[in-house]
Amino acid sequence: MLTGGNDVDDRKSTTGYCVYYGHNLIAWSSHKQRVVSRSSTEVEYRSIATVLTKVLWLQSLLHELHLPTSQPQLFSDNIGVVLLSANPIMHSRTKHFELDLHFVRDYVQQHKISLVHLHARFQVADILTKAVSSPAFLGFRCKLMVGVPPTSI
Image (tube, rainbow, N blue to C red):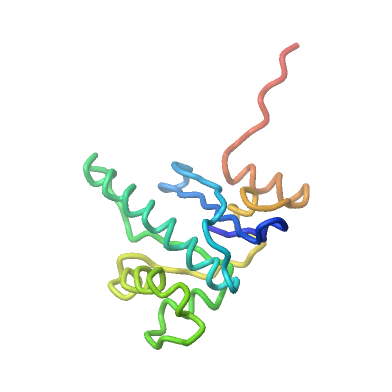
């Protein structure tokens, strides 16, 4: 999961995520956040809370279908988000996104999800939130299992 840069007109960030079941992409989304965030950590935390609600819904659906699930892993390229999810100390800079912080932190502390740092160059969801280089685009497209349609002769 990843959030992309600010819109120059309204300064709202874009949330993008990809959800996999095994190696299969089963859900994805890209949308503008409703509020202007004050930091990249706030932007990322809002995104993680959003994708967590989707993952929990998908987990419930898979359970109803009697399909096995394991502990979901959420990936963030913001190391501050990962550290903040494990640290129970509140900081004055987190008051703007405190509800999202508690929501995510509860699931991390109960070991119902794991929040893992993933370097930005490996963030597949970047393709949904920002312009990426040609090699990155081709690599991400392959990881999303989206191919070029065959040409008709």
